[in-house]
Image (cartoon, rainbow, N blue to C red; front, top):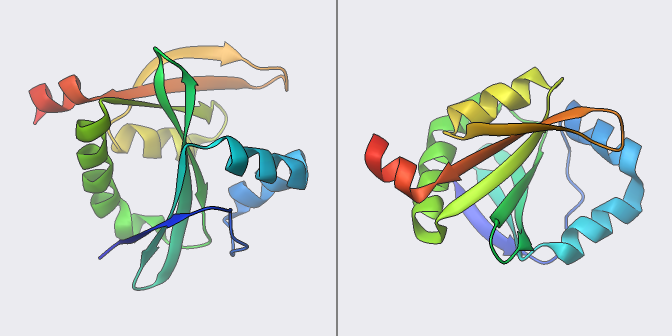
Length: 145
């Protein structure tokens, strides 16, 4: 069973290699900025320990919420179906969530698709990487399940 805790700061946890690489490339300032610009942040835990920290940011009045995730050093596959059910329940209440994944991060792309996100576009960012944008909306969930 997944436990969800609302948090105010991003805690120090054992992160996945991908999350560690993000922290190394962006630095501590980015960690503080992400935390302070998020509408809400959650720590998700299972009986095996922390799974991830995720948060939601408002980009504008019309685009809905953008979700970000920091994956802990854990076997995410053990919790993926429970996470998907939780995410779909949440999207049904808020209407729409988007997420951006580095096009070169194959595991992240697979995870976004498994969670039910649909690709919407690609963009070349300032860091020279191409990012895939995904969306998940209430209407799509209602008609597909």
